[in-house]
Image (cartoon, rainbow, N blue to C red):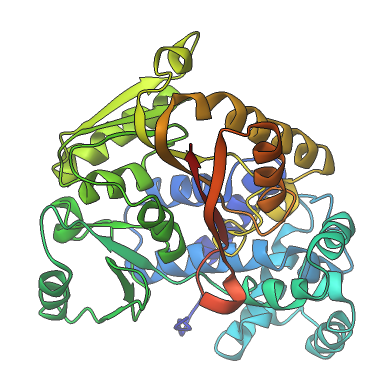
Length: 404
């Protein structure tokens, strides 16, 4: 991150406000940050990046920063929030060009506390004890590599909308504007930005030439291997990132039914589909007999189920602080319910993908094993783990299952 020569009080106040909204008012980090940036349209791109990136970084290292400050990370007080912001900025080196902002900070003490923080695993990687115990019991020593990989800022990946432009053409268009991208081996339509930028104001985005989507997430739609003319159901569509990818793979032919339990997400999906030039998506709010009416109608079915989100904490770092052990139990029950009931929408001979953005076996292969043991008319074709430590992407699991 480029260090601005001078920090202004409104920038500090914006980060303080975001932290209060995230940790006291319980807002999602992305919603809190976006709301603050929208309410101050006069800020330039550099200031906006400073606010967003430092807020995310402080949230990502929340326990560590509170340890250094001598505060309780589980309970934010209004009185301590500015001190926590300043410590976060010291860790990122901003004190070197802005000494007047940090004149009340004991830098020697801070550096000693930073060294001390490195000796405690939970403090170093900023996770609660219960979460470390969960990771230890499920993935053991692998948790070190995964938490290390997810302790850094997420990279920006684009998914090229091949209905409107080829990957090579988009690369050329962006290069003509001095925007460098790199292809992503093993992910067909992905490009990675070489330099982090806010892409949502770009003309190419508004024209629907691409969507912002993690490369690992793009692999899930590829895994289902949909074909033009098929009847496909995305049963947990959300705002539709994977549905848009599936529709492009279908070359806008056949029918893609995107379902969700939250109507506002389907409204957003319709907007995105229009921008992408997609006409084969129908949206359905899940209520009453929605699932029953689609029984044995789908050639392909995507079940991107609710999960802990432990594979995407690089992108959503506040999840570490908002997850609770009881939620882990509840969400696994929801996963089994969706697998059991929604799989009935699949035709005989049809294929479905069960997917999560988690790295826990209890949400992944163990759920599939349980489902297959209880539903003998289904069989596993293949599955895949996408691990942050191995790919640099977010963490995902996907299982391709066929109805016999």
